[in-house]
Image 1: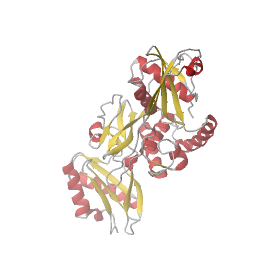
Image 2 (image 1 turned 45 degrees about the vertical axis):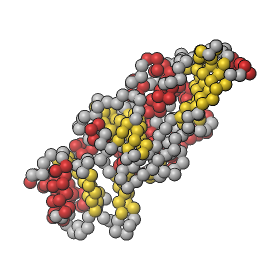
Image 3 (image 1 turned 30 degrees about the horizontal axis):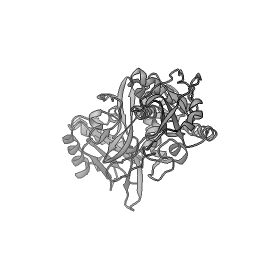
Length: 404
């Protein structure tokens, strides 16, 4: 398992006046139609102003900003920052990894600290022990001379170490068999499936803003799914970053993943779907609508709200349906025969569901009417009397669900 290690240097500084403020990150969750939920912000932003000479002793104990060697070169959000903000990012990360209570930053401007911290959290999904931060401005004659950064931890260093061991054991199980010569596409697909199959969506899950809820609690929300995907793919050296914003009217989190030099969007939360069977039981299944999709597709119902620049995702090569040969650009006789064969093989193998995608809404409608409305699917699936299906005309996909 990859651990974070940073060397550091310590020096000292004395100043006089203090302005203190709290800053927290905001993240939440939204599910496709039929589901809804909003997670409260981790911490509300508040501020106070102090000018108390009794604080001199505390200020005299401050260090000079550390000369931190970066370990984040190549990480997506980090690379979007200008050089001076990269330096602050490195100092913040160094403090979090070393579980420091307070460190001095190489800036006197607090306006961009929250954006920089959110870049850090986007790049590192595994920082489960910290949720937000406080910053303090030290002033002389009304001018800020130095600023400190204090992470808000949810556990002690000892508790963190023990939790890390437990998470490592679970993560190793997720990654079993994937450290070999398996393609990066298959690695992403496998992790996507495992997260959906093994972890339930639950708004009331404990620690749902971090990976503890995924690996230990087995229940999470979108922030947990997105953080876990980034954390696991990082172990496989597959570039991945967490994106936050809005979807279906609520706060949400998802990912950007790079495969063969091209970026794709992935939303694990929206791959976690259910349907009602004949006995009104909820039956869980994996959906692939949001596995390696384009910017154009993602922006139909997702609104990113990150400060760092996002790439234009246009590649189709590693889209799930293209890679699995379930993507259709026509509905001629050959395409109909191929579709029928896909349904037949899935049914004979006892699969719970099968999904297919089309290049246009018109083709998707034609296929749905032919195989489902007119029930030609029965010609390929012998003995099939009942079938469930779900259509997504926005993504030009329909899912066939075989009852057990």
